[in-house]
Length: 127
Image 1 (cartoon, one colour):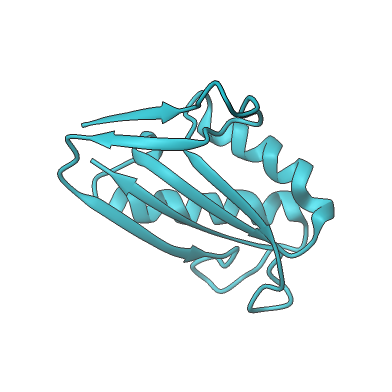
Image 2: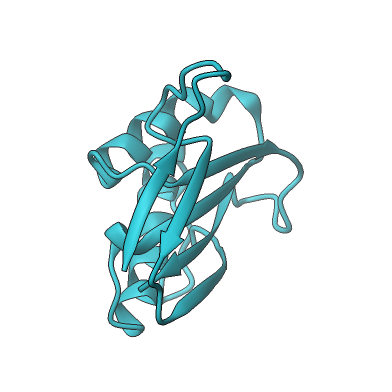
């Protein structure tokens, strides 16, 4: 299986550790990760954004691991932020977690189901 970025020369450069599109060739399995939130196994929700973001990514990673996959299998990530003020911290933490892997990416500023959650992340992974 090969995940290749699609960055047409006719579009502005994709900055911020993402690609305009993702081509998946030879994939055998697809995992749709439901929206993961900053809710720990014991039901605790951290108060600050950085901790919530890291916990939410840990939850995404746990779902991927359950399918025998990892971050390199991510083809598409959608992040929902409760406020625009979190966009820089979100980008910084995402780049830290994903390293040089660049999936297709969407970030939406919106209300989140629970007022204490500052973000939610859903994803599509392939193998």
